[in-house]
Length: 139
Length: 394
Image (tube, rainbow over all chains, first blue to last red; front, side, top):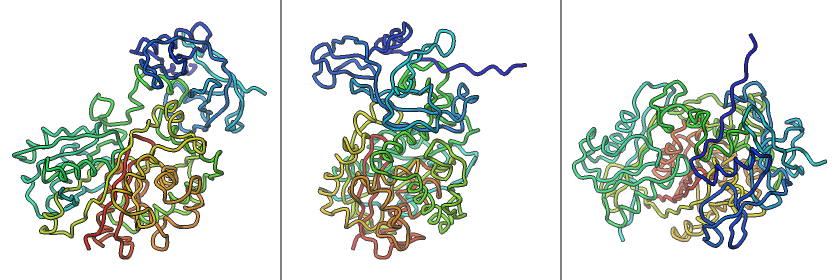
């Protein structure tokens, strides 16, 4: 019998702004929340602008470009969904907009990940109905 | 204003799978702290704990027979609050809100001891998050980043990139603490390890290896805070609380915010920098006056970060500071975690570091820093956190 990989844990947010982020991702777009008043970007989504206090927001497509800000290679898995792929790489990316995201770089071997590596987002349907913003190296 | 002092400390045996409830463990540690001070438990009129503490004040009142509880206070989060619970107890005493306040932590967190369904009860909270991510975990779990080891590994990698810190620097601290633990009969890990042992141990999340990690065990620890004047009449030498300071920086479980606000290293200060000046100014001492430090470290990487952010060495110099032997008893200038810390003595979310700071100032530590007069304790550097300075009453 084939072992079937465990399912990914799925975002199922309470906050409407969080849900909006994932709705954009599901359509293939990485969009970042911006303050409608002072245009400061923020991620993860929040109800208030920390810079000016405004509560109105707009969503803008991100350039999707950024750099690896921090990286690790994870050995024993914590989550069942990742048990079959250890060791795997994980990164924090700083997008050009200045916000940070946790992610994975899909076309780089874990040991070849490097802080400072330029990357760009790619949205992947990792299993049926679950799209995630992942990254590829920009060589 | 009244000055506060630690008058008693208490701790249970630290061990894996003790099979006792957290209430049971808390009661033992609290009673031991009272007994150490020579005060009846009925004099306790305040409790301070972590916001995720599962032992409720109301249960302690009933179980211990506390007739007149006047203060109940909690602070974020886990290890971040280890010094802050003592700091808050001191504040309450200084302002007369309460006169005899216990700060404590009790844990039954064995892997198999699933104590209840609440995310903070038993087992690992991140392993109990489930496959529907309602909260902040949605930004990390889908990418396989779920455990504190993963988060600290990412933080460490940035520090290594900016400053040239090496994984071995974290290993050297882990080895120093295991040496300290080997001298401590209360420690769970009594066998010392070498740096080669550290290299040979399995990797958890690069650069973190097994011996860099805190232990997974049960137990409880408590400290009793009262006025310095009263403490001087009690059984043990009084240990004055010289100063406390907190800071509200983001937490490692929310890395996007953490990196944006505090952990860019080189580009931006760490969170503790904001508390450092307040802390040392209140005590009218400098980092150079500190004789011994207890630095709460879910992973050994937290030690160099705390040493830098609190000003014991320059930015980026935490690794070389450890490599110089400065944090190792007996010859180091600033022995750190002389009881063996979270990877050697026990993991009580850092609260076992408080009794050791007190022992150092009473002159009763197993790895005693000769003539120690000022001790520093800080909570985990990666959380909303804080620090206290304690003194010898000479």
